[in-house]
Amino acid sequence: MTGKDTIVLAAGGTGCHLFPAQALAEELNRRGYVIHLMTDERVRDYGKSFPAQQTHVVPSATLSLGKPWLLPGRLFRLFGGYRQARAILQSLQPRAVVGFGGYPSFPPILAAANLKIPSCVHDQNAVMGRANRVLARYADAIASSFPNLQGLPSAAAHKVTVTGNPVRDLVLQSRSAAYPASGRFRLLVFGGSQGAQFFGDFMPRVFAAMTAGERAGIQVTQQVRPENMEAVKAAYGQLNLDCELQPFFMDMPSRIAASHLVICRSGASTIAELGVIGRPAVMVPLPHALDNDQLRNAESFASAGAGWVHPQASLEPQGFAAFLTRLRSQEGVLRKAAAAALGHGKPDAAQRLADLTEQLAGKTRE
Image 1 (tube, rainbow, N blue to C red):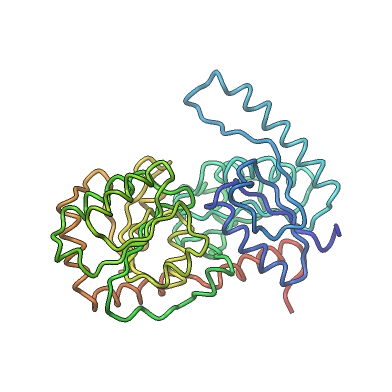
Image 2: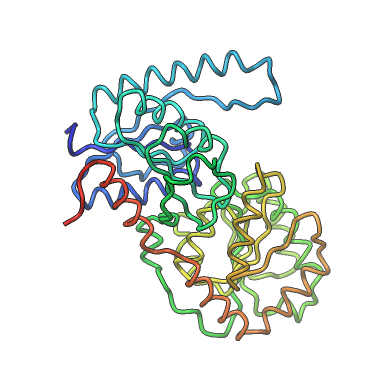
């Protein structure tokens, strides 16, 4: 089915871009639209449950200025992706195209502009991504997850609608989950869809810095990268720590809901899911993220009273162990932060973004 019932979504092939795109796809499917996805090769790892009628892998490339000798080849690859995206859009004749950032969204949004197809770019972070900054001049609308979107070109400010960051139906199943009763202290540690080397190295040292009495009653669920699994498992075994370790949890939203406290990076999807479910978090932003977007995300969440920001460079095991031990004993503080997290979340973000998409498509909701 093409034409009036088709919407094309474009996103980079990792979880941070695909998860909000999937959430919009699920909502648009409920409204009767057929979804096509344009993305890159990484979708094979992260897009297995994406509800698209067809997924189109389109060539793309970053335009980093750090290696200028690579620029001609990357421009040639992007041009090839643009021609392919243009041909696909001409065939599908979609009502609208929505991009979710990352350079794989470049060819489809540029092709949509050339073909006069209404388009929107959605930015998940508190700092606008570099690809979206360029695409802002070509898109008809910009959807923002945060009220104050840093890095937005001033000429495009009139295009902005604050929708929030859409979360998948799997997350909404745990929406506003009741905070767990006291008992075993359930601590969830994860680093985003690809895991985090840092937590695999650091957290065993944190628990080793606690006394046996301080570790007693802690139940740890931790995402551990495959290359770190044996070392982390051995370290926790020596400490007799109650733990469950996996490279990836397919049921991460329910794991978040079951936890008393989350220790995590602060990618946009993580912040959105914590807010919808309502859980306090200790956030360690990725230190080398472009434009410090993870730090700005974490600061927004923490300023709402929903968590605590700990820069990676300043962390040391003994101090962090003492912080966790103290926080664990403050159930009232944790419950208050959980309530603040819910206040920060936007569970209706997918509906808001779908409304904006339909406005672009020329069809308003009844």
